[in-house]
Length: 150
Image (spheres, rainbow, N blue to C red):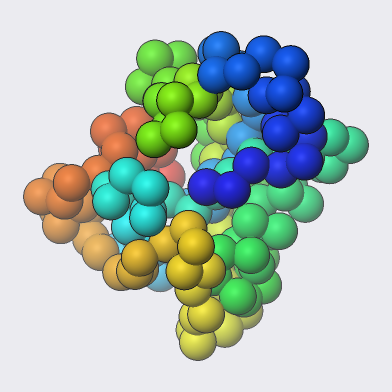
C-alpha cells in the first residue's frame, strides 16, 4: 500500500516506529456475497480500504479508496462498526509498523466493471461467508463481516 505524502513526512522523522493511523473499510455486499481483494503486499484477502488523509471526512475517504482501488464509485449505506486493537496492527515489508483504527462502511457499487489498482491488488472475488472462512485472509475481517450480516 503506497504511503501518502503525510505518512512519508511522519516517517522521515520517526523511521519505522509504530504509528496509530485512522482508516476506512468498505464492506461491499451483493445479497449474501462480499467483495474481497487479495492484497499485493501480503498476498492475503481483505476488504477494500485505506487511510484517511488529513482534513478528509471518513465517508469521503471510503468512497475515494473504492474509486482508487476498484475504479468505480461507491454508495455508502451507513457504518457497520469501528475496529482496532492488535488484530489491526501490522509490519509492512519495508519494516514500517502501524496500527489502524478503521471505520467500516456498508457500501454498494455504481458499476460492476472494475478496474483494479494493480500496485495494491492482485485480484478481487465475490464470496459467501462460508467461502471467506476457507481463504487466507486478514483475521480482523471476520468480525466486520459478522457485524455486517447482523
